[in-house]
Length: 283
Image 1 (cartoon, rainbow, N blue to C red):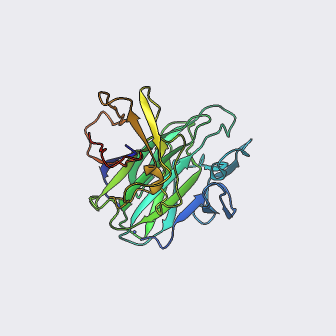
Image 2: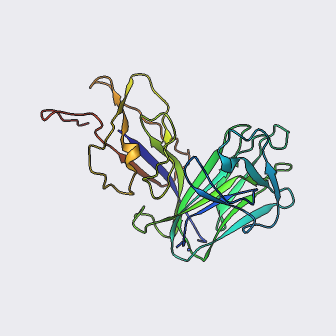
């Protein structure tokens, strides 16, 4: 078993094709290429005209787009408006890293919106980054990403925004009037985040928590044809969890909400062990 993908589906009431991918480093005016993933970043000067730019202290070890942020203490709701074209299927990802930028050791909580729709309630922490991701079909020529204050003295901020243009065949079962909110995208058997250059849609796959009684299998080459729904990159099919015996089972956590909501789930399986002609694997 290699990967697991789970989205929540919500109705979206106000929803464009992008001419190019967009990578906005909030709180800076620089143009640069990130060494981590060879992504070209731009500052946010052309996308928003208010808020305060902040550079984090001790930022040398951070992923560069997280080393700055823009905080909004002067208004309840602030929006980034990104040019698009109507009818595109897009992936939008927003990053948040508090890093105790204000010295108060009080990470804020606030709301995140896209195109007028509630996206998530952002819960930040002192020293851990968090990102939120949504996939949907745009309804206008502009994508808006907004943060909104929900409690006194908890000022919303944002660290980075990424937008990826998706092929219309990706997530083909998605109704154009609904949106997919990422819940989990897991690469089993990996020890680190997988963000592969062979994934043209630049998705992020996180490792699963290791469980006793499971064996990690690894291959140096793909043993199956990768022609799967929603085009998972080959890098996430090179590792897997397996049980130590045929009588054991694997339990996968889904982190589903308690409320009843529709979900979109993909599970991918690849044989990463070398089997001889007499061997098969089924379950």
